[in-house]
Amino acid sequence: MIYAKNKDALAYRGIHPNLDLALDHITPEFLASVGPERVELKGGSVYATRFTYETVPAEESFFEAHKKYLDIHMMVEGSEGVEIAPPDALTEFDRVEANDFYAYRGTGDYKLVLSPGDFLVVFPGDAHRIKMQAGGPKTVSKVVFKVKIYD
Image (tube, rainbow, N blue to C red):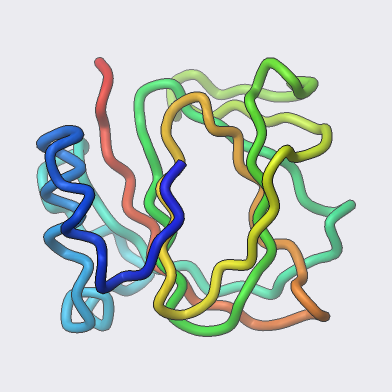
């Protein structure tokens, strides 16, 4: 997991070439250009999509994890609570292997609030629970990069 400010994104280059490509696009201009349709940066290996939704009480949210992709969550508007936990500490209740999606229930080890100007990188092995209210319901808009790092 990496939790940092957008302005510091390039400090994390060198972990994986696909991650570098995504980090290079953490700019106000690129984030403003991303809409609800997937923007391909490198085919199915690196892409970004904007999501807009209402935050929910923690009990209405669940953890998700991936085995091939990491996610970069970039908050553009609003704020949400996020929890992180290792998948083996949680109870799996759903999976769609073709979509690299694994769903879990349980309690997070780390809690944070993602606000505009922040980004969060969750690697395979970082189950993440998003969309949680932080101080009440809010409408949020964020850009999520999907970055393939394992075949």
